Amino acid sequence: MHKQLTAIIEREEGGYVSLCPELDIASQGNTIEEARENLREALELFFETASPTEIQTRLHEEVYVTRVDVAVG
Image 1: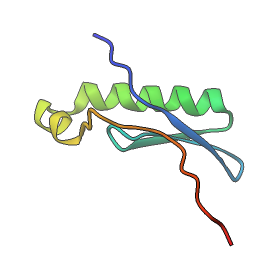
Image 2: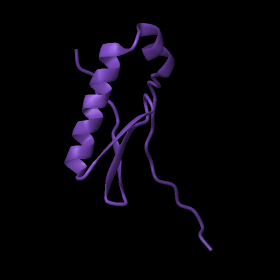
Image 3: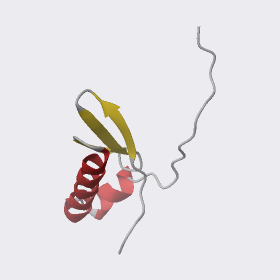
């Protein structure tokens, strides 16, 4: 079975941090591709080891990523 999840990747000092907001699982890598792949591996490991109850408790089915216009200064 496959499931599509959200991956948010942002640049930080010396690399990239990746986050899956549906499960609040994060990883990192030296490149965008590495951060994405490491997150995928972390998510697969979570699904392999977590109980059905833990998955149900942590999984947020509706996550929206959008931009907000704010006044600065």
